[in-house]
Image (cartoon, rainbow, N blue to C red; front, side, top):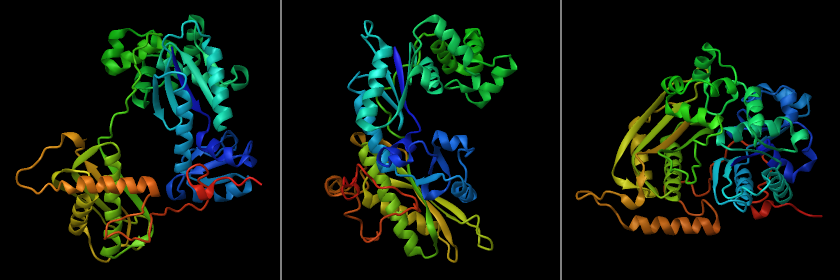
Length: 419
């Protein structure tokens, strides 16, 4: 059997754990630079706040309807997610972290257990230890567990947040209740294709001939169909695959016009990419550097450009990546442009323990030990303690976050004060 554990309104719930005065009141979370709404509490949804709503357009509505607005606090959300996932790993070793607020569990050898009771036990422990409310769907396959989770969340008072599809009758009823557009893995194009042949819910899809599904939706669609029939065909992905590309891109608070200011930002972005690669033990072969002016500024010169550079050898050295990223910036920089956004993308990633050495380029082996020391210092004393010479030593990247709450669990100076 599989279970899907989904944190309810996760970002809003994380804020409410440490600020319970907002429990039961409308809450929205904004994206980077306080751009648009990326998360809403149930109360905010009921007031008609749409996902992706531009914050500047809804300022008056937020104020009029007394909606509490928070800036994204990813250190807090990431830490709370880690706490929830560590609890789940106490119940089974087979855990797939699907996203920051979702995880699949596979229960092997639990034939004599009442999984409905186990689900309620998990839910109660997560609530007690972290304060995060969760919904749990349990079923013979991952796709059915997704549907069971929707039922648990939709009818929370009746299911107590846990629903188990453990009989054929429950499976058929759940599939008939689920619209085809709500089936996990059915995108817009597949939905249109299925609706043309009269398929409007998950049950009708599960009854289609195998040959038709495979021809129209490939082998992945066939696996999904088998999953909905209760035959587990989509297996747990226990090991998260390394990223194939890593990027650091930012919009600036204002605009930058001088090369030196852009150089500092590009160098910082390249160093950030290098650090991310070292965390997943990867090297890159190619860098892409781009700059862009503000497309919304009237009267300003419109300009955007990018440059791709091939490194002499694969590397995750902040020094090397910064040097080449700045070389790329020199090629695309133009005077008298008000730059609003820039970024660096590392491509052609490969495992760092399988790098191809070059006979003709100086592959500086000292960089490896130097980067290890740098990472150790940052882990011990915090990020941004040491930087490259072309970075601003007194500046850390600061997004527009006018409604940011404290980092209650990751910053000692911002922990809760008990009076």
